Figure 1 (cartoon, rainbow, N blue to C red):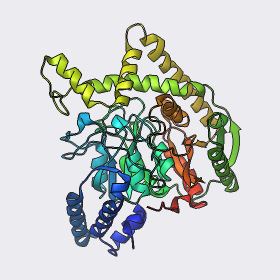
Figure 2 (cartoon, helix red, strand yellow; figure 1 turned 90 degrees about the vertical axis):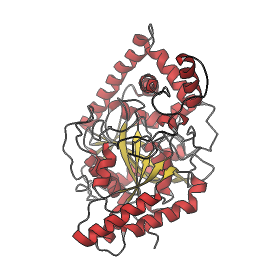
Figure 3 (cartoon, rainbow, N blue to C red; figure 1 turned 60 degrees about the horizontal axis):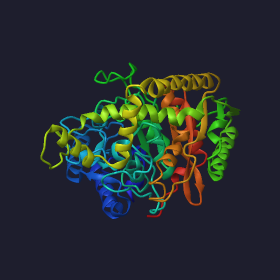
Figure 4 (cartoon, helix red, strand yellow; figure 1 turned 135 degrees about the horizontal axis):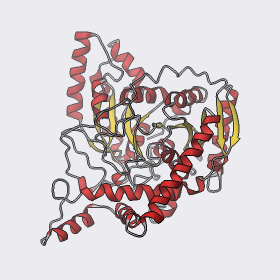
Length: 485
C-alpha cells in the first residue's frame, strides 16, 4: 500500500486504529520525495530526520493514551513564506536564502498542536510575486501532469507536492489567486479563506490587505479538516477576525438541493479558453442535476479588477519589502562603500527581476503627485468591486467561475511577457479585492491537462463553499485521477 497516496481522513483513522503508524506514513512520503523530487522540484528544504522523530513521539503517545487529533501523524508541506522556527524560510528569494526565523507562524503552531508533522518548505514564486513558480531563486517547479509545463503559482510547490503524492496536506498563501491557480493547474483542492479568517502572524507579507494563508489538499474533506485547524481568531494578528474556531466538515453531506448558484458572465469573457469554458459550464450542469438552481448574472467593474489589484499589491509590496536591507538578516552584498552603496547593491543582487519590477511600479504609484491619481483611485474602485460582490451574494448562495482562464502553459513560454502573465489573474484577483472566500476544485481535463472550478461564497461562509465543492467532487471524482510520474 502506498500510504503517501491516501488522504488525511483515511490515514488518521488508520493511525487511530494502529493499523499503520505515523512513522510508516512519514517514511512513505519521504520515499516518494526521493523518487520524484529531482523531476518536480516542489521543495526548497525538507526535514526528514525531524519529521521521523516527531512521528515516533506521536506513535508512543498513541500507544500510551489512545487519543488522536484531527491531523495526528499527517505530513504537511508548508509554503516557504510561512515562518517555521529554527528552519529556513526563504520566500523563494536570494534575499532570504539564509534566513532562519526565531518563531513559528500561528498556523504552524496550530497544525503541530493538532498532531500534524511539518515535512518541508515548498517552492514558490519569489516573495509570492508570480503565477507560475518560475521566479523562484531555487528554480522552477514542474507540473506533475506535464513536466514541461508550469504548476501555477505562487504556491506552485505546494500544489505540485500534493499532485505527485510527496505530501498529504499543504499550506499556501493567496494574494491574487496564489492558492487557487496552482490548485487548478495541478488538479488539487485549494481554498482562499475570507480575509481575516486565518491568522497572518508569521506570514512574510507581500500585500497585507489582500493575502490569506489557505489550505491545500487532495480532496475537499481534507481541505475542510485543515481549514478547521488553522482558522479562528489570533490576538497576535490585528487583521484576524474575532471569530471562534469551528468544525467546517460538518456541512459536507453532499446535499445541495435548493442552493442558489450565480454564474457571472464576466468570468467567461474574451480570453477564456473555450475548452476551459466548456468544462466549467459542464460543472454548472452537474450542480443543476444535484438540485442547485443556477442562473446567469453580472458583476460590474470587473474590467478594472486586474489593474486595481496590481496597483494596490505593488504599492503594498514596495512598502513591505523596504525592510530587506541585508543589515539585520538575510543576504548582504559583498561590496565596499557607504551605507547607500551597500544597500543598493544588496537589493539589486538579492531581488529577482519580477520583484524589482513590482517594487519600482509600487514606488511610482505611491510617489508624490501620483498617489491620488493611482493608489487612492485603485482603493475606491476596490470598494466598488466589493459592493458588487456583496450585491450578487445577497441574491445567490455562491458564485461559480473558471479558476484560471487558460490551461497550464509551458515553462518559459510567458516569462518575458509580464503583462500577459498579469492578465491570467483575471478570474482570481476580484475575489481578493472583495475579501470573500473561494475554492478551486478539479472539474476535468482538456488535452490531458487539469481545469479547476472556482466556487465563491459570502464572508465567513466557507462552510457553504466547501459544501458545494464536496457535492460536486463526490459526483464527479476528478480528484481521484493521478498523474503518471
